[in-house]
Image 1 (cartoon, helix red, strand yellow):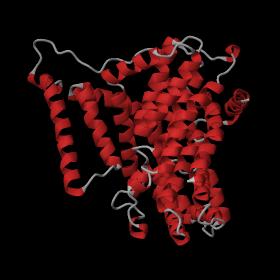
Image 2 (spheres, rainbow, N blue to C red):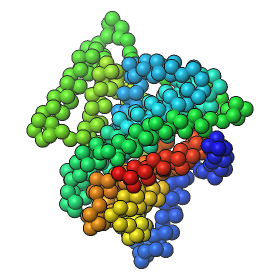
Image 3 (cartoon, rainbow, N blue to C red):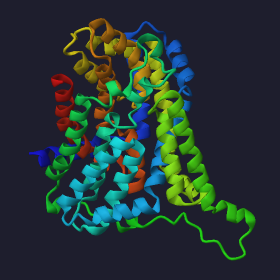
Image 4 (tube, rainbow, N blue to C red):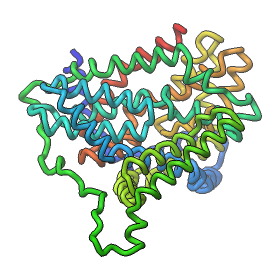
Length: 440
């Protein structure tokens, strides 16, 4: 049954889903139409809101780009590559291959979403090299499906931002520590439930042998090495560029800073901390500053599509926020909620809004001012309400192609190649999210 469902969605997606940039432009137009229809704002006001917000998320965009780039650079280091080869070698059959990729991708995304996206795509390539008869589209889709776990993990934007001083909701509800969001029973149920479900789901979605799409061998060629061997007559500048001591010194400074800050202010797991840890680890594993810089340069190519699209989504976010459209949509769900159903309805409202604002931090800015005061008024759990916003964003990323771009860039595929499988994952993973929010 699941195989037939995934085949149906794959056929539909191939016909109707445009390139992600066109998707973003279409969403911009749709948001304009909805805002004009449902709010009292004039067209000139709406255009001004959109244009004024076009560059509003540059700082946040840089944080997100750094998560992607540092995760990519770490995943492309020699030790991590060897780990990927060892992992891929454990798969003997196509079924084992897709299950392995889904399982490892889900765990890696729970550690760091950028690292997980990249590691999953790279593992999919390694499995495709070694296991004949595996559908390459499903392998890459299995890697992206792991992204469902990211908001319940260590790099989830909403729980980290909610715990960070100066976030938009601090003055309204205060800070929400990660002990009330990430490190809770319901989050453990959802995150580990997804880690167990996704490999099984990937196995059940496998196409029939006659429908398998083999990988183009050109897509599996290794990228150039970032390491450089110096000649005996290398200059002082060249030796400094390839100095292992400098790489270790940078990592040591980062480690000392984190220890001192923890001693002085307590442990803080925010976006900047995650980025700093991955930067230091990547510097050490690539051994020299310039080897790491070359790895970052290669990683930045995967962020190019995100860079051109993120301003459009920033404009959409500003339009939804300042026009009141996001509040109207959220209020539709919140008004029918009680203390027991509130997290579930907040989750559904976030899932809808994610099509226009595919950013966890963006959801906190757009939905937080409506969802969190309502949670306070109903005496609902603030941590669970915040995570409901996060889960909704993660859930419909399976139908929103924005964050699939880095994995697709590494794999060499287009969004239409994988989204049919991802939409199937959306349907079945929804059961885990709803159960975790409603039963705990």
